[in-house]
Image 1 (cartoon, rainbow, N blue to C red):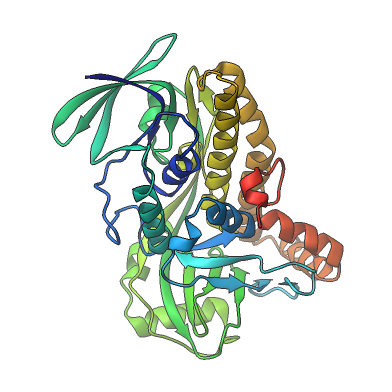
Image 2 (spheres, rainbow, N blue to C red):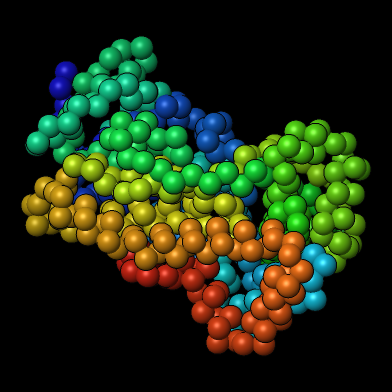
Length: 404
C-alpha cells in the first residue's frame, strides 16, 4: 500500500495531538503516527507531571474543544510569588491587581492527555496509526516516503509535509541531519505532589536556590504540585529518601510560608537538558514541540511553547489549504519559522539565562538578583508586561490563542 497524505505527524504526545486536532475539518488528509497504543489514563508520555498552562494555551484548548473534555477541574493560578533563598528581594504577581484574569491554570499532564485522546476520538477525518514506529524516511521533490512498522506489519506512506513532533531525541530531526545546541544543566527535576498545612488560594511559588529552582503549583486548596531541582549526582538518592527526610529537604529549600508539608507523592527524577534545533525546517519537513526545542522547566514554558508551535503551523496550513497551496511549500515553512522565531528565541533565552544567573553564588550577582526582584515588585507596568508574556501573549500570537 502506498498512501499519499497531505500531512503526516510523527509523535502523538501533547503537542502532536494538538496539531492533529487543530487541522480537523480543514480538508487536509492528515495521519498521526504514535509509538504507543491510544489508551485513556495509561499513555506513557502522559505521566504524573503537573502542567502550568498559560492563559493563551487554555484559550486555544477551549477553541479546539479539548478543554471541555477535561474531567478533573483545573486550578486557576491567580498569584505568583518569586523569591531567592538567602536574598532580600521578592516579587509578587497578582492577576487582579494587574487588571488581568488568572495567569493560567494547573492540570495534571495525564488529565490533559486523556482530554486530547477523547477529542481525537471525535476526529473523523484523521487517520491514527498506533502503535507504530517510523523506521525510514526517503525524500522526493513532490513528497516524502515513510516506512512505518505498525502492529508488526510494514506500511509505506507518502506525505506532502512531514511534521516531527517526536520529542527531544527526534528520529525525524536526526534523519534530516539537523544539528542541535545542547546544554546539560547537571541537574534533575524531582516531580511530585504534597499537602500544605495552609491553603494556597491559587498561589504559585517559584523559589531560587543554589541547588536550582523549586516550584510549587496549586492543585486545589491544600494540595500542591512540586518541582524540586537537585544536582544530577544527588537525584537518585534524593528520590529514594523516605517521606520525612524528603519533606525536611523541601522545608530547607522553601521554608514554612505554607506551614508544614505532608503526604508527598512518589518521586521521579527527570534529567534537565536544554536542546535547540539549529533550524526548524527542511524540504517538506517541519519540527515542533520538544523536537524543535526542549527547555528548562523554570517558568513552565515547555508545553506552552510547543503548543504555540502547533497553533501557528495549523493556522498557516489551513490558510494554504484555502488557497489550494502545497502544504509542503518551502515558502510556507519559511513563514512558519519566521513567525515562531521571536517567541522561541525570547522564551528559551529567558529560562536559560535566568537559571544560570540564579545558580551563580558570586555575592555581587546574588545581591543584584535580589535588588532586581525588589525593584520589579515596585513597577506594576513592567510586572504586567512580564505576566502577559508568561501567559503566552508574546510575539505573533495565533488566533486560537487569542480566543477567549
